[in-house]
Length: 408
Image 1 (tube, rainbow, N blue to C red):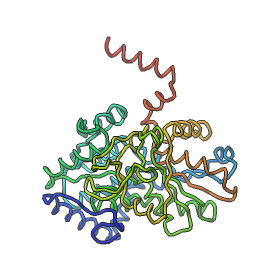
Image 2 (image 1 turned 90 degrees about the vertical axis):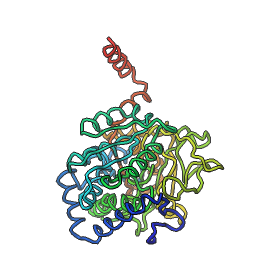
Image 3 (image 1 turned 60 degrees about the vertical axis):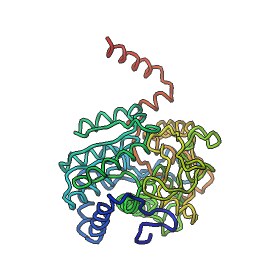
Image 4 (image 1 turned 60 degrees about the horizontal axis):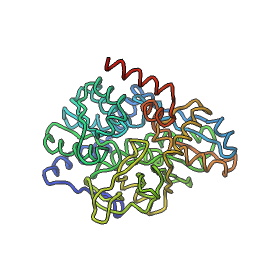
């Protein structure tokens, strides 16, 4: 990365003039924090005492036996407080907010995990909190909305555009322009204008640091491959960072939705529908038409349902350092079901994309090889979506009964 936030031809900071001073302040504060050894230590300390770090690396014995190839390990980011890797980033940014002396935080959220994590951080540090969430995501992630509001956050449904994650991001930026003196925007993924891609990746790098140490201690050698789902890219860059300088293949798995051939997906890097453009303050691959208008996206996983992708991952695709694949909704539900039944683990729908590709490829590897799957979140937030996908008759009867009681 150069000092303007570019990763080769991707990245940058395409921001309105009114926000330049705010971004300059953020860059200065983040740079000073990175150069302060005490900051990283305080960051590790709060995650250890508040969020159960280090998260374990679990040997998936039953999945290994089922696949019949590589030894399968799972990095358990689902065991973080709030149930996902998102807390790593928000606690780091929360410490920066304190350094800058601001009193209010805002955030966007898709799957709701970042919203819950931000609301939790705000409660912990005593900040006022507003969360923007697309109206579609509010409906499919109602349990997370409930917890955000219980934590004291104001949740604002966004009814513009396609009413999903990209629209929530747009609304959060509008808020920031109006309230920049008191407010920090806790962007949830490694996208957006510089320094957000670098900053979010920096805080999420704790995943890769831990995973590398853990696999060396358990196996005595590095893994053959590391798999992570890719929406914006924060969990993928978090775990990939620990192995970037090693001879380890890194595999990112995007949302294939109903299939790449249908156009109903959110695959920017391994479909022909993605092209390079500038939107939401940065340059990367977007799902856009020939006129630069953003296309509608689709994924069973709300957290992957986004038109853009981290400029860092776009750069790593073009250099060939990371291989990108996609997983369809159907494959994701099947992999989720298999993992639940074989290991008693319930990955988030986002994380299950990584399981799809890993379980496809594990049988072709040697039993002496090890692979790591980053389980970026837990699946209890997806109960409505998953139960609907499974067409569970008992669940359907439960929902019908509760609706009748509500309207009685």
